[in-house]
Amino acid sequence: MIIQCKKYRFLAFVAASLFSLASPKALAQSAQPPSEEAALNALADGAVKALQSGDYATAAAKFEELSPKIPPEAPQLEEIFFMLGAAHFNLEQYDKAVENFKKYQEKFPKGNHAQDVAFNLAQALHLKKDFAGAVENYAKLESDPKFRDRALFYSAYSLKEAGRLDEAIKNVSTRLGVEEQIIKRILYNHFKKKKK
Image 1 (cartoon, one colour):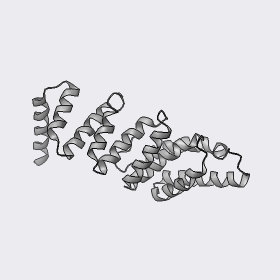
Image 2: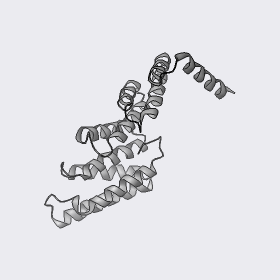
Image 3: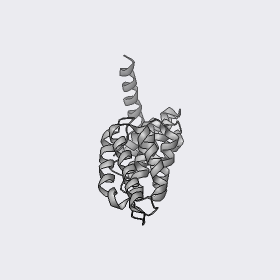
Image 4: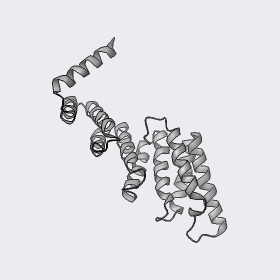
């Protein structure tokens, strides 16, 4: 799933559903006493419910509290970093979103959400106005058919925002195999219509 601006409820529902299916007993299977297991499960359940309901501040706080209590080898840690990054993104706390998406990438480079996290990371970097970082991360997704078009578009958008429009046009032209003049005409017509 992809974070697109602040509208994230569907992704939260899907990720939270996956997390809640796996979490009840597995979350605390590190030989924790039953009371600690119940407390971890309650904390995880509260975090998931907060994320699903759009209460991103509560979700982020609960996931922050939960993450250090989960063993590093527990599969739920992948979902926690993913949802924690999402919660911070939706709170427009892009520094924290970037931090958690990068943690996800370090710990789960081939994880279930690896490509989604890469795209979300690029978006968060763009929104932080780190256009070079955004372009770099979008470029990593251009070989993935699911993300290619969006990565190309948003990469060009990041270049444009960085004041590098000519480079954006050249990149789009090269990657699509279309003459630069055609791309310039399309953009000119697009901006001309917006002015009316």
